[in-house]
Image (cartoon, rainbow, N blue to C red):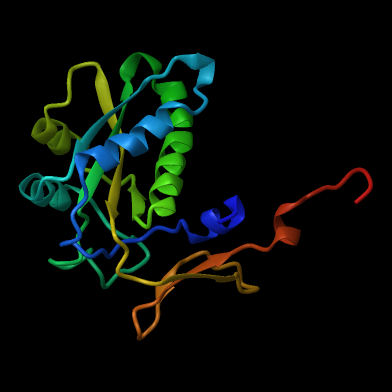
Length: 195
């Protein structure tokens, strides 16, 4: 699979085969790959907490918010919930650069997961205080993001954004998740040189 194909398949999956177990080793491998990516000023301020434990996952799940554009959907039902979570935290002394690193690390984790058939979703809407207490986050670190992971149970398709510029994703009556994307012409604002 080319990198472009991998990027195209790495979508925000929100429904999973919950009974498809993940191992801590698999999550550690994802974090180990992310660990190799660039870091602003090489400060490497990110830290991680991993969970594949069903009872811990059940306690993490209600502390996250899912798919803000889908007003009539509060998140995956039992049996469709993530089989694992990677919680990204930043060193509070370096939070400015930690958020830059977070994007690089999170996308690397999701690309690496998809390469093995595992999908995921970055979730920034997190009840941080409650989740930090639950996970016993050490002092000096702040939760930045949660990544939900599992074997995808939904189809996600990319489509051309309509003329009205509506960016909202949606689901059709078959449950297929549609994600509008801007075309290349609308995002390249200048060109210099020969093609």
